[in-house]
Length: 121
Image (cartoon, rainbow, N blue to C red; front, top):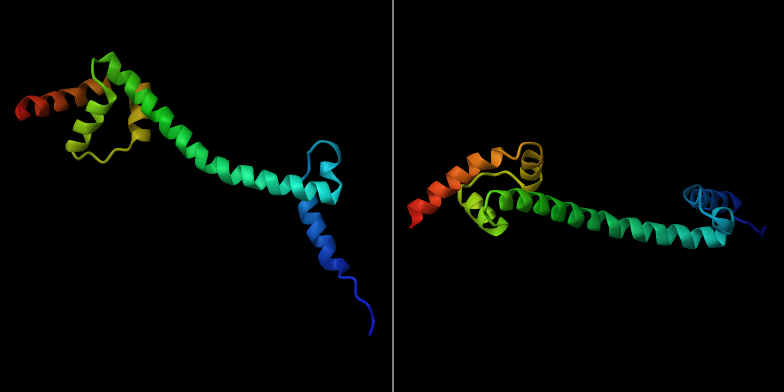
């Protein structure tokens, strides 16, 4: 029986890894063994950081809303509590964009919140 060396599949595997490793420093961009390790680690980092990016942006949105709320003498937690009671389906991303570009829009919402707070007591 003749010996096969699987060169076609091996070449395509190596090519896939080395194309992903383009731009790496040292031997990591052309030496397959090192490139494979570096590419695997890079994929792990990208998987992790796709989740961390969501966390970071949510924190940014909360900081922006809190900054505007504090300008008008209200805490973030109080604002969110009463805003949810208004049953407005606007997420933090949209709120932060509106308040970032037009902080005076917060006054309208604050009026509604103050009405609701006064009716509660």
